[in-house]
Image 1 (cartoon, rainbow, N blue to C red):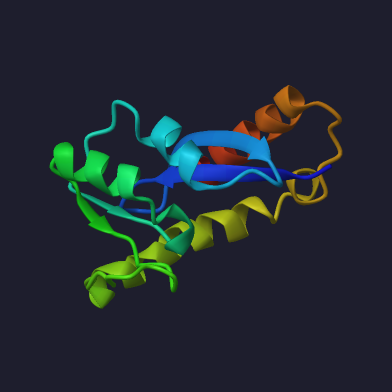
Image 2 (spheres, rainbow, N blue to C red):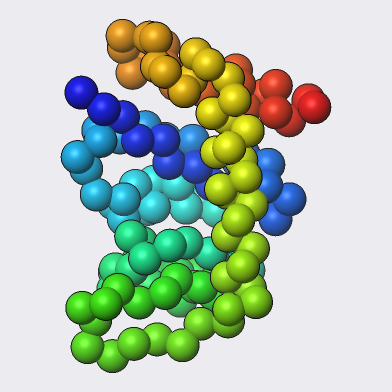
Length: 128
C-alpha cells in the first residue's frame, strides 16, 4: 500500500540514484543497490542502514562510513558528528521533492509511473 523512496545524493544534495521499495521493506538492503559501482570517500546514512555487511562492504571499498549505531548494538561505534550533520542534505532533497504534489500524494497506480514522476521532479530540482 505504501512506497519508500531511497535516494543517493552527492555532497551538494543533488540526486545521483533513486530506488523504490515497498513501505514495509527494510532500508539497508536497498543501500547495496544504491551504492553499486559508486566511488565515495564517505557515506553518511541514518541508523536504519547500520548493518555489519554494509559497513564491511564500505570499508572494503575504502569509504568512510558515518552511520550511527543502533541502540541494540553491543559495541557502539564513534562517528564524526560534524560530518554526520551533512546528512541534512538528503533531508533537504526530500523536502524539495515533496513540494511536487504528484509525488507527495502519489497519484500514480504503478511503481514505474511513480518512479518516473520522482525522476521528473528530481530533474526539475536539478534545473532550479
